[in-house]
Length: 264
Image (cartoon, rainbow, N blue to C red; front, side):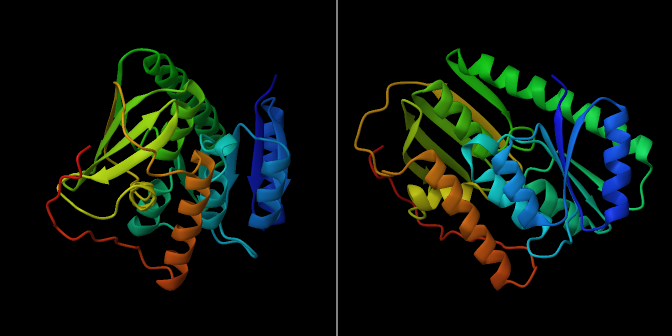
């Protein structure tokens, strides 16, 4: 079956041209005129790839991707941002949201065609490799390739039990304990707060870093007590609130350097 691509842009000419190019390559293409339209279409029919503009009415591309990532069925959806924004801060923001590529307007349609094919191949290979490694006793990788939301969904699907360790580039590190695929505890190393669900919300903001999962026995109470879907949706809501409150500036979350050992 041909890959299904959802394209979101408020420019009717770009929508028509992108759809034409991709349909000629054999893709199934659906178009949306704004972020809200794209969200509704993605929830109705799960696409294999999203190509989205950033600056759109009703819901911008940043918010659209955060909302999509909050649904477990869409947490691993590959995304290509298609935008006139070209600053380094915009690129960093896009990749922190788990974007797989970033195409700056104006662009050549041949270039977009190549990037679509490359993104679909890379995502398929990455997800397959991650699932195969999860079948073993350990897994390690790069958060810029497989985001935390995707990892948590895969761990839930595989009903894994063990320790997921994460380390930001030149920054803090954290641990997430899962049992039968469900997050039961989370904390940052050498820091008292945030903890459990609040810690997961903080870790979901990391767009880069290293992760390592090790299968092991996990004892103790379930201190999170909510589903993976709830964690992803609440994390997306909090990120939207933070971005609205900072009026488009990059959010920086700080953690007090208090050493602690809670017994896990």
